Image 1 (cartoon, helix red, strand yellow):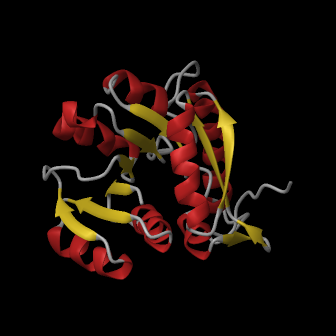
Image 2: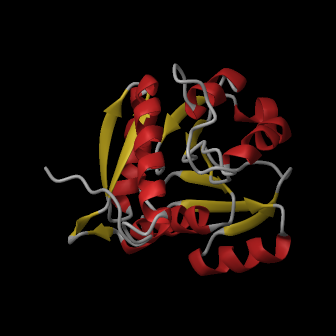
Image 3: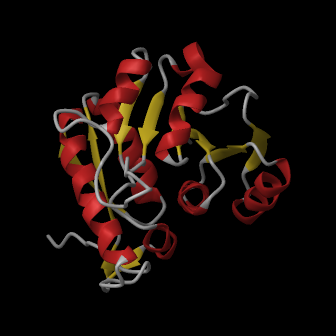
Length: 207
């Protein structure tokens, strides 16, 4: 059993909590709004907590909007050292919905790794909408979670959690591949925002 702390009680946070709980893992769900966190935690059987409370998970999922990541990293600081930190964010310019806000030669995940050098950072869950994570399927096939990172053991651990929850997991390469995953997530978001695809759809991986 793996212990997982999910920071953020929105759609992605709740979906990942459900996946982890379905696989029999211990889940801590953390957010600022205590009432919302309590409600979301009950749905998945997670333990609720508020930002600033100690992290109980060996895996920490940053299920918050990208602009909130800096505050989360500041709140936990050295407590992230040694932990597997999963970044599902898509660093969009939400004022225009037309570009990424990180430089072209880096990614949100790489910046998180730089700010939390003791953590084992992975990019995952950003190319799947919350609805397809929750349903475990897309287009008649199992939802696939692409995982990028430099730590093979960390990737294997997260992949086991994903598969245990009824989804597929694929190693997408080194953390440097996070840039491409963020571009893919960006494209998927713009297609959905423009009505080309539904928020219950998106990209699938057929093998």
